Every structure is written in C-alpha cells, then in structure tokens.
Length: 565
Image 1 (cartoon, helix red, strand yellow):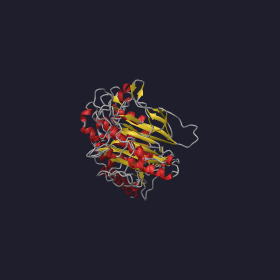
Image 2: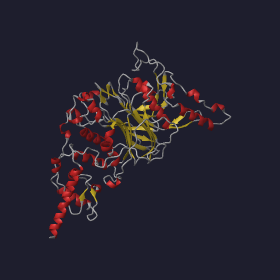
Image 3: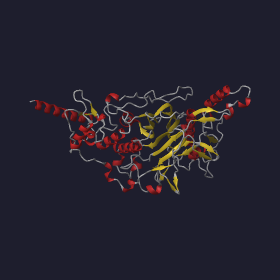
Image 4: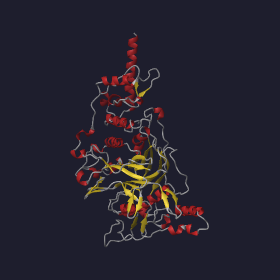
C-alpha cells in the first residue's frame, strides 16, 4: 500500500514537471538543445552568479528612450546605480523565442526521483541533454521536503538515462568554405612587468538586426535561407560570444525588440550589465555595450545622438555610446570605451567625418583628466569601436589615426583627392553647434581654461590661458588630441582583411586604442595590445558568404585582449 502511494506521488511529480515544461514553452521551433548547451557553457564562466534561481532575477526598469536628449555640460554624471536595460519578459528565461515542436519534446524522458525535481525554468532539454561534472546545483529547485541529493547521486542517475535524443545540429551541412577557422595572434606580452596590470578582453560586433535582413532581402539572395532565420543566427552569435568570453562587448545593429527576449540573457544569466541606445527616428536598432559587472565598475556614460534637425550634414539617425569604466581588481583612473555605427551611404564620407567629429568631442569631454602648467590636456586611455562604414584608405580613417585632416581641398561628399571635382571648402559644421575644429565643445574649453587660470600664480601672466585662441571653427582642417592606433593591420601583404562583404571583402569595422605620439608615429602607452583574434583576408575568404550556418552575422566580430597599467 505504501509503495503504491509512493509510486503514484513520483508519477505525479513527473507529469507535473512535463506540464510545466510544455505550458512554459509552447512554441519553440529551433534547436532547443543547442540553446541550452550554449547557455550552460556560458554559465560555467560566471560561477559567482546564482543564475537560474527566479528569486534572484531582477526585472530592470525600462529606460525611456523617447524624445531627444538635450546637450548639457552641467548635467550630473550618470552611473550604473540605475537599471540600464529594458525588462525581460518572465516567460522567456532563455533569451530565445519559445516555439517548441511538441513531438520533439516528447522524445525526452526526464529521470525523476523521490528526492529531487528538475528546475522548470531550465526545461526538459537541459535536464535530459546537458550533463556536466561537477553538477551545477542551480539546475534544480530545492523542494522543502525533498532536498537536492549529492552530486554523485544525481550524476549516476543521469548516466543511466539512455533516452536522450542525439544533438540536433543545424550546422551539420556546413559548406566547405564555412570551415575556415580564425585563430588568436599574440602581439606582445605582460611578462616581467613591475606594475600590476588589468588584463581584459574586448569584442566589437555588428550583429545584423533581423528587421534589416527582412527589409533588405535582396542583399542576401545567394545565402542559405535557414542561415538567415533569427533563431539560427542568434544561437551562432551566442556561441561565438561564449567562446570569446569577453569582459566588454560593443554591439552594433542590436534590434530594440530583441532586448527583452534575447540580449537580456547577458544580464540575467551571464553576469553582464548593459547600455543600449536606439537610433533616432523610426529605426529599429541601435548600439549597445555590455560589461562584466564582476570585473568592471561603470562610472559614467553618455548616449550620443548625431542627429541635428537644422544641420543637413548631421540630419541622420546614427548614434553612439561613450562609457567610462574603472577595473575592480587594479587601482587606476580607468579608461573610456566608445562604440558607434556611422552612416552607410558610400557617397557621403563628409557625413561620417562630421559624425566622428561629434563622437570625439564627446570622448574628449569624458576622458579629460587635467591640464599641465602649459595647458596641455591629459586624458584617460580610450578605446573606440564600431562599424564606421569606411575603409582604411578613407579620409575618416586617416583623420582618426593621424589626428589631423585638411579636408577643404578634398572633393565634396566623397572626400577623395580626385581632380576636377567640386571641393568641400572650409565649412564642415556650422559654428552655431559650438564644436571646434579640434573636436572639443567650446564650453568645455572655456571651463578648463577658467579652472587652469584660477589655479595659476596670479603674478605669472605667462601661465594664463586665453580660451578664445583655442576656438577654431570652419578652418578647413580638423584635428583631435588622441593618438589612436588600430588593433588590426587591415592588410597582409597586398591582401586586405575582410570584416564584411560589399561587392567584395572589405574592412569597415575597427577597434582603435589611444597611445602616445612619438614624432610621426603612435606608440603604446597605458593600454597595450596583447593579442587579437585574426581576421581572414579577401583571398582566404573567397566566395564565402555570411551569415551562414556557422556565423550569425554579415560582419565578422573583432576580439582583442588588452592590458591596462
């Protein structure tokens, strides 16, 4: 009699669990097993977080993105004490759309026992297919009357389970082109360093918003249709990020409608915290920065809108994010990270140059530390990432890396050196914007000079600075105070590295980092490049097209490892 009662109770628990799984996930059409395996592998990297306990899932406050942010130099610094990302819907615990083929779920037979119950927030796929040693106790809910058993007991029960279906892999029919592998390339070493350094990994990735895939289908006519489905692309993107395990991720083309169901997985389960800025107007996507909150403290940030309604060269909807971080492991002033996605139009290099001028002015405002007695500014180390839609032979690239560009005699709009074309002239941005030709806000220049003069010896007028002398507008030449280096070489001999395909493989995605000027070259300073994830060249890529069944975007990710003194 007692045995029958006990048997019925166990059977009831088993049925209850299956009902929980089926009701919680009614619609999944993708490879759920692959999703769980990716998530679980990512979780192992962040052992400090109690990932799957629903009590620890904090719903972040939705940030109001409506309207335009006024330009203000006196606004208080914003910190990460506030919620920065849109809330995750409680029905989506995985960061994937829940569309389940019921027959596929019925293949799973989840082992049950009288002393434990599988966490319904995980689902049958993880319980039946994912096995790790040591076992992650977060996979189970602690039932009051039935405590979680020892690890060895659980593992032995799962070893006996022979009913798990084989791993269903969409990538089983990969093309031979997609097998091209990238590898890490060492650049320098931190061995024998006296000062303690903060070593971190940074990724920049244009992930291709799904709305753009569907609205520009003609660009992907030659692609595998399955590879263009968002669920397939998302798993590949997630796996790529998991393999890299970056401390900072700079995204472009993040679809706003995907934040709650997909990108929130980084905050909910993987130990990141995020910033998002949607493009202005009716655009569906924007830029984002995610950082590991265990290693980094966000001190302040600025969400930059390039749009200026009455300025034709800036009436575009592109945006950027600029953020200042301090490492939690090393005592330092920190560093600044910026990410942006500039205008695509190939014929409008002048628009992209104006957007970069605006971006660097925002970076100058955040990275500024102090001025020496001669008024020369000192800055925090800076990293600039993004899709610039500009090649390494463009005027935009030249301006960023050389720090100066004489644009007045370059051809209008394309900023090329073609003869016989109408030239740009001296005016790029109107003086009314009060953005100097040195990529600084005039108000900031005045404040710094006033502070410097108030601290200088009143008897020594030679130490006094006149900010008016530093205010240059429409001079025909742009400059900026940051000696930037590119983390990638862009060329291997005569072969060009490819980050995306636009009629041919070209480079438009970059990671720049600041150093120090030495004559005509730029040397490393506090930021040192340790290694980079190599890009493939045009010759190596050949007729490969992305997205494919291995890579989830139409851009390659850029991944580098830095050390910060």
